[in-house]
Every structure is written in structure tokens, then in C-alpha cells.
Length: 263
Image 1 (cartoon, helix red, strand yellow):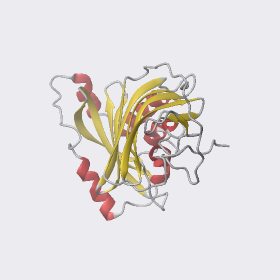
Image 2 (cartoon, one colour; image 1 turned 90 degrees about the horizontal axis):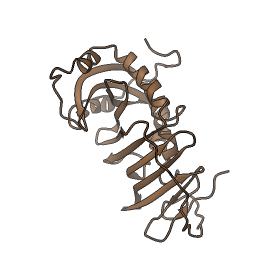
Image 3 (tube, one colour; image 1 turned 45 degrees about the vertical axis):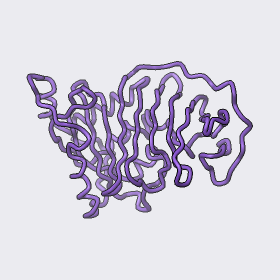
Image 4 (cartoon, helix red, strand yellow; image 1 turned 45 degrees about the horizontal axis):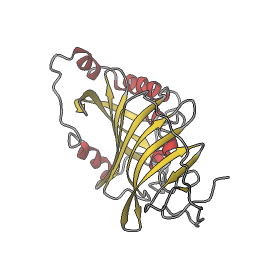
């Protein structure tokens, strides 16, 4: 039922286990099957098989639209919102806006990721080269088959179907489970816990044609990260900004300044 490389890791801490119940239908209102035979059939299918099929579909994406939001305090995560068009093939690229924490202040800025560099215009001071962009958010990881959403799906432990829900007008099967913290690190942009084998509650929503529509990660009882994917296989043109300001190195990287170019 499960892929061979899935490993059973540490049990959930009581507080974290309770958090999975908080997601419920708070993010989505349940939709009735209403004669949608395909969706009804999917909700009754083997959840592990659905997750595996969605992993393959996600790994093959050429592009998609990403909407990411962070509610509450996710440890070590500075990104609060990301809204962007992603391109996975033939080369990784993205453009959109990101909201990040600068100390206790939130700043929203347009960004472009191209040729393995992220350029952002924070404070309307012109685009600055932030190197690999991890000091803001590593958008290159989202559709990466080896470390992004496809990898998350492949590593879900004990998946269980939890009925149908409506995700932005599309019926999808909600599946609950857990994922090791180390699997989430590329998507959160940082280690969210010192125990990398700790299991984090995760909810995923998969459409009737096996597309991943939504992921909700619950690293703490009062915090969650929601990732919505849409416009599957849609690609956009992404070009390097023409008005790049002189970089200002900082140590450690700070979203308010340009990070060092990665080795």
C-alpha cells in the first residue's frame, strides 16, 4: 500500500496530535457529493493510492499557481504570504509577491525567481539580488519532485480519507496523516523543530483527477501553513528584472538586505 521508502517514525506528542482535529472543516466547507459520481468514488478509494497518484501528478507539473499563507507563529518561518506563478519545466522560475516579517513588521514586495536567483523589491528601493532566496522564501522547492510537495505526498504516514470538501470551487477528497519535520523543511524554508523525526500533522486535498489542490501543515496547536495549488500545468514567462540595485550583503541573511550569492 505504501511506497517502500516510507519509514515509521516517532509517535505524535499529545499536544500535536490534538492539533490535527483543529483543521477539520475550518478551512473549507464540506460539499455534498450531489451526483458527482467521480468524486464520490474517489472519496471511497484507498487513501494511500490517492496520495501516491497525486504525488506522481505533482512531480510531473510544468507549472502552477501558488498561494501560501501562514497563520499563527510557525517556528523560524519569516514568510507570511506568498502569491506567485511557478514554472517547473524546462527550468525553475517564479514571479509574484511575498509578505515577510522584518522583525515585528510585515513587508510585502514583488519578487522574481530566475536562473537560481531571487530578486525582490522590498520598500520600493529597486530589485535586490537575494541569492537563492531562502532568507525570504525558497519558491524553487515547491514543485521540486525530490524535496517539494510531491515528496511530501510520498512521505505521508497513515493516510486516512476524511470525506469531500470544496476547494475554491473544486470538489476534493481530504486526507489526513503526518509527515516527518525533515520532509517539511524545504517547504517551510527552515527547520521548525529540533527533532527532525517528529511527526507533524498534515491535511491534503486531492481532486478527482489526482491533482493536489491544498496542503495544510500543523506544526503547533495555534499555528498552520496553508498551501493552495491551482492552474495546474499553466506556465508563464519569467524574466530577470532590469532595475537591479547594488546588493548589500548581510550576515546572517536578512530579508531587509541582500543575502550573499550561494556557492
